Image (cartoon, one colour):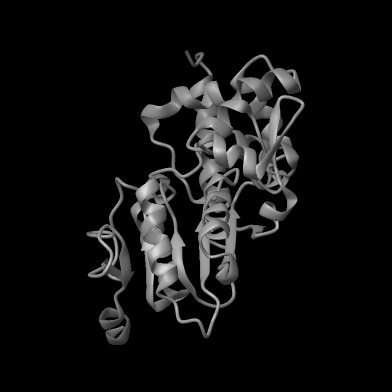
Length: 272
């Protein structure tokens, strides 16, 4: 339980998270703050959230603030999560003309399971037409892990069959490490979806799954508008299974070609 002085400390941490990432933690999830920050408290020698909050006030723009944000971010991920989504993405990419290379953006890629799943799938299915895969996340810690391609036994077994484990990973010191060639198929970079410059060029597919759930409506609408700007006219947006653009933005509409996906609403864009 949070102690008597912790609600103020919790507010400091929630404010920091929103300032750095745009994500807003619901007040009824205060319990998660203590759970998420306990390992950092032990590492830094703080015996309470209030003590950690005091240290944060003296190092708000330094490494401590970065560490706190990284711990508070929800980095839940798995390989080939919602496998039918990958089949639809493959269908979209196959429809791209041979005259150009398809481009995919995994926005909010966490520790890399989604873009590495895409790389495995396309290397197996379309070796001679490998799409460009860009993967971004606001957390430098998550990206460092993604670039290393190193996963625990628990992480590797979540969604990855043994055949792919053996084909694309090596067992090293109890972990599973992706082959360098697989990691090189993905361009990882740090990006804040709210504030940072958008990737250059347009994409055929943007996956932004279970990221916008944590944004307040105004920022969610803003981010969706930004995503629409870098999606090709015939491209598609993939959201999480429990997410929708309906009532969130006019920048997208449900796709008529791919059930459950969304396409840019160019009629709205033209009228704007």
